Image (cartoon, rainbow, N blue to C red; front, side, top):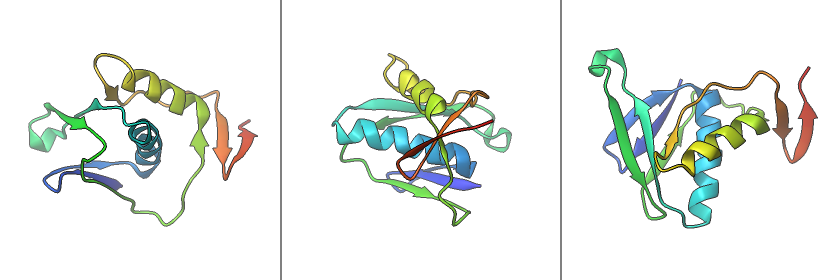
Length: 112
């Protein structure tokens, strides 16, 4: 289980695989100096509500991973997450598509 920290005060635990994809989408948008919101559901222990943060190029973001492995990115999932990030509602988590095109170290690998 990884952790996303925003501005040193807002923190949420996110599965490493999900976090890897979120980091890729966030990094892509912020490199282009695009601003957007990132919204997630809070854990039931925190009331089960939701949190939204304003993502901007000068925000202090920390992506902390439990695992040392980098993992493989699912191109279709990246596209789905980027689609939400480009919508008026901003980035939010959507389920990983099963029919994946995997991207690893610059190569395209098809999952079977």
